[in-house]
Image 1 (cartoon, rainbow, N blue to C red):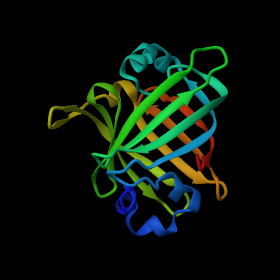
Image 2 (image 1 turned 60 degrees about the vertical axis):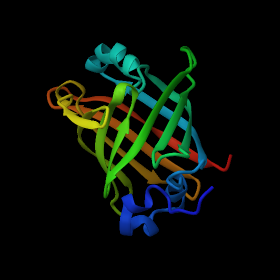
Image 3 (image 1 turned 90 degrees about the vertical axis):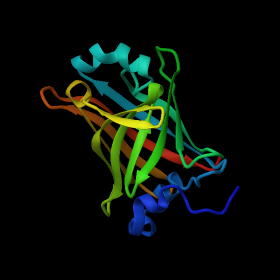
Amino acid sequence: MNDTQPIFKPVFGDTWDTLPGVLQHHYANRPYSRDTYLAQGQLKIRFGGLARLLSPLLRWAGALVPYQGNDVPVSVWFRSEPHSNAYRLERTFHFEDRPTYLFYSRLVPVSGDVLIEYVKFGIGWKHRCYFDGQKVVLEHLGYVWRFANFIVPVPLAWLLGKGYGEETALNDHAFAMKVELTHFLFGKIYEYAGQFEMSHA
């Protein structure tokens, strides 16, 4: 492993040192390394009629989770990549009445506190990531499509709504989080929320 600063230290800037310990652990991965951390917890997953209609599209794109459930056990591996500054999230959802669902994405810093989270086919969610003194906030900036070396804005908000996320420390080892999509016509169409505990595995 190398001795560079964490991927997210320049993202959070001057607020990095004020992050609660559990969130610093969550975002401790260094770029160009094999750093790996694990969080385990449970999520409540809920979505409305529009999201149900979009469920086949979500499965095809490998984006979000196309099934609902309460207290769904989830494991999330946070991995660095040896040859890039990307931050990988490998999520495993263990449903009681459905097959295990895997959801992978890559977070790539753009500049300052702006990142793009990519799923399959180069589809990405551009957002700001910052600490407001109480919680980490993920603020929607739009959707993009990466084609070769080009990043093209795509007008998907009219279909998928705008994304939002937040994470709040609960103690030295656990944090609460939620992610939601809000449509300009239909309101909140998708949400998952729950708690995770960081592991030293």
